[in-house]
Image (cartoon, rainbow, N blue to C red; front, side, top):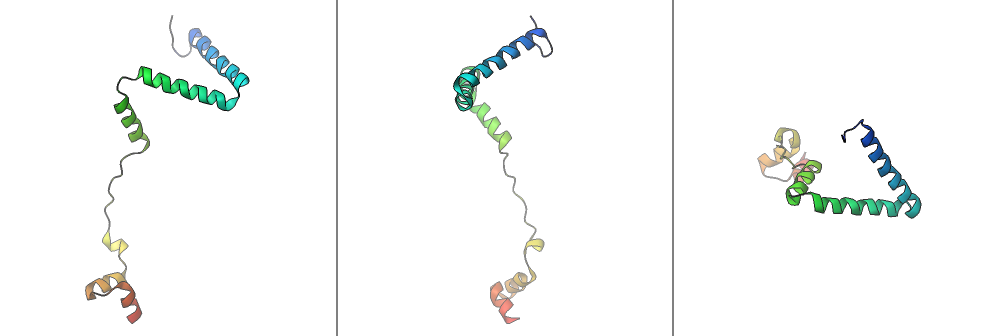
Length: 99
């Protein structure tokens, strides 16, 4: 018995799964069915995954990658007034008022 996509066995199993989901939806409603499927997924995760910590770390790192430090180009971020104020030792607001 081959269980690959495109075989009759796969079609029958997928049909049974969708029929069960439809019957759950009709019997319990949408949100209760979603809750049942979510609880099933959590139970499957707890029972089937060996290294849960590493799997969770990999999943989180895929979703939220590490921030890489972005170098600051001082020439782009510092205004001319700020540069003059830095050279003279005054605050930028004071340098603007004098001009």
